[in-house]
Length: 329
Image (cartoon, rainbow, N blue to C red; front, side):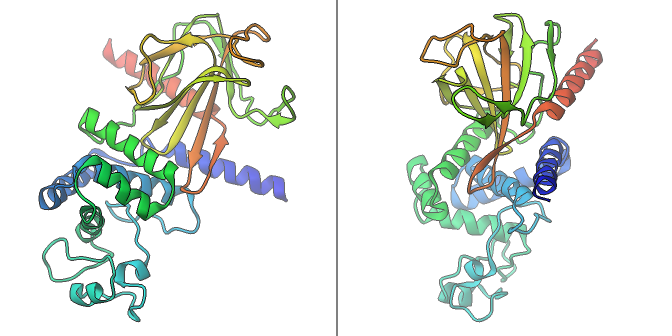
């Protein structure tokens, strides 16, 4: 029974992640950006921080059973108690004056005299109003985010998203590519969940893509480099976080691309290193197995992070990249 539950959970996360690239159409992107810009004008909180918070909460609501699914344009979630005030007996209160009296976070964002949890402008303005109580600069916004979420990793993820949005200046950042050049000689199959023995019994948390030593390894998505360095298991490795709370892990590299650094913004196709056989020992250890790229994907839900099978995504991205190349001809 437990095995079926685990498999069912994995399939759910896979389907949600595969849906990330198709869940938001251009009209929704435009509507969200319009709201971010409007609230930025009212509060001076930069739009890209509002977009980052909204996208973060939208993503965790996709994978958490204890949170309702986002049914509107804005995905930020307030509990009724937090919105109306912790001691307010009327949790669906919409009177801004009464909400303020009970120290609730609800505010009137669109000027209709009501503070409604079902109104996108009210919800977005309420969070911006909260951040405004700390300030509009980067450092004070970070303080406000930490006091709200009480989790360093969440703050780091949101700040990373904000940097990505600011760098590209748009919300449409769902394109992916295969991690190796399509013309390269490579092979792979699903090895996620297989047993591994070196360094203690554990499962394989990724897909191995076998290729020649030094074949370029590319970023598969728009994201920010969260980690770069050595690990005794993964050797030289890089971790990139995308806008959908997914962490992409590239391991066993032969080395890193020139000038690649933590905090760097990347896009699909950015070279980050080369295929290698590093790992299974102290820094510099190499050659204990055939050269290949270990590609892993991890999802964050606001509490913890777990791996899921990248293989369906790799197949989809290869197909999409081929299709895009054909359209360019």
